Length: 308
Ligand SMILES: Nc1ncnc2c1ncn2[C@@H]1O[C@H](COP(=O)(O)OP(=O)(O)O)[C@@H](O)[C@H]1O
Ligand SMILES: [Mg+2]
Image (cartoon, rainbow, N blue to C red; front, side, top):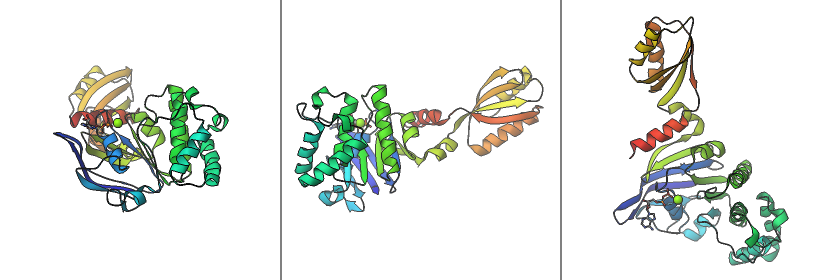
């Protein structure tokens, strides 16, 4: 379990993280979503004790990262900065070295090393020099080293950033596999689609502030901007479309067929119900009224825009 309380980090006059509070429940995958400069890396660096906060606290499994970093991070695996490995070493040699630095026994390193290389699908490459690896393979090795000491919390900063499309897909697959093994995963990303695909919950931040934090399913329903497809019995007249355009909260109306039109609408669920009533009051016999497409993208854009 990860808990962040009122975390703030100032860099001179810049508030990189601004009174951020967040809880990541056990065995949950949370996407920490925000545009470049939102404060994701700074938050993750504080969580992993690479830098200190200006104020506020962070707990891992209930242990304070600042006052008791060794214990707090004992069960945490992290990939924070683009990993640099010695190019002349193999994955086996790299894990042996990193394991011994962490005080693991040679036998444990060998056994666990095989497991983690299997988890990141690098079994075949364990005796190949890393200098020959693609960026995606290096990132997978970085995840393997993070798993070496059997953590149950995994913290990943933009794990697919800078990878080619295939590398991205492979890393996402590995994260999804780890999810099934009940790890608690906190991963940052600036890609909404990635968070939607991989995570159970999303915490959206910008300017160091938490904007929303909820399950992906819930976020889809709270989105303020939606596209609604309206189907009428008989043709939808231009006059009808004209009057729908003038209804409150309607942004645009677009005809897509003789008796079908799309309404881009800004409002919560109850005003959506009002919209249906108003369209019917304009004389239309409505046989279909349903949300189309994924409104999450619109919500992301809207929230980020509002916070600027
Ligand atoms: N070491 C630093 N010194 C000064 N400003 C920094 C430093 N690190 C980050 N920042 C600033 O803090 C803000 C948040 O950065 P960062 O946490 O890296 O965002 P993200 O990872 O979401 O892209 C940005 O405005 C960035 O320029
Ligand atoms: Mg970053």
